[in-house]
Amino acid sequence: MSNDLTPKTKQFDEIISIIDNARTRALKAVNAELIQMYWEIGAYVSKQAKNGGWGKSIVADFSVFLQTRYPTMKGFSAQNIWRMKQFYETYSENEKLSPLVREIPWTNNLLIMTGCKTDEAREFYLRLCIANRYTKRELDRQISGMLYERTMLSGAKNKELIAGNGGLAALRDSYVFEFLDLAEPYKEKDLRRQIVSHLKDFILEFGHDFTFVGEEYRVQVGNTDFFIDLLFYNRALTCLVAIELKIDVFRPEHMGQLNFYLEALDRDVKKPNENPSVGLILCTGKDDTVVEYALSRAMSPTMVADYTLHLPDKTILQNKLRELTELALESSEEKNG
Image (cartoon, rainbow, N blue to C red):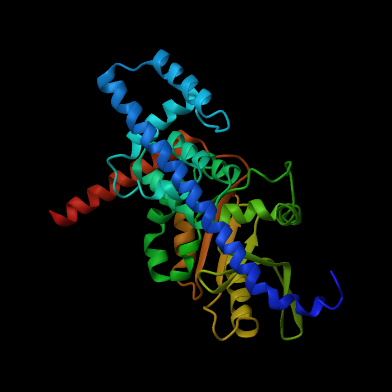
């Protein structure tokens, strides 16, 4: 590029934005048409399977016919045609979810369709995909990590806490860090360094609205320097999020330290247009009763969460979610009765 053009490049930014937005809209339109085509093929095969006696052999012949007729198009394998049928039958009677499936890629639709057993879980991941533009790898990780079950459990357990402190809505009381390369025993600084070196995966677990500010973030109070393990900014909540890392179970004294940090952030770092800072204590375990007592007089919005370095047991989480749902239903019936 000529040096004469260099100062003018900023003038071209608007044009670049127009082109990029047009490309994004075009890709979305192409994807929507592809999903619609798969939907209609699925509807046709579903009808033929029910009324026309179509089975594996006919679908195999149908697959060969389509691949011969459209040799440059992919996606017409017999296996994928059966998936189109399942796709149509999964969503055809759901007016709420059927429009959403057209907004995400086919590979992500397949992950959600095969990895979720309920419409509630499917809706959760569909909306998450649309909001965060997940890649296949990112979505697969969220489903494997039981994000839906963990989010529902956290919301049910902390309903009153979240209702009283809107800033805590973006946080959960349990996190999974299976992507960290940590061997027992490890120190808090090892945990912090591993998180920073795997920041993309860490933010994927926390949510895309989190932006990293710094590690061992220094705040000065009086003549003394203090250091916050990790500091983030949440765009949706418009606030700073201070995270303190612990390699043992939660203890009440942890709360005093974090509240002190939050006060320092609000007085000296927070901008006038931002909401009060939010705190999160990450520990290896916690007694819910101890946490409740510790939080009962907390002045700042704070949550205590435990973390694990291994993917959770799917059956255990599903059973816990089922138990909480049943308890909520029983409580509702008692109130109404």
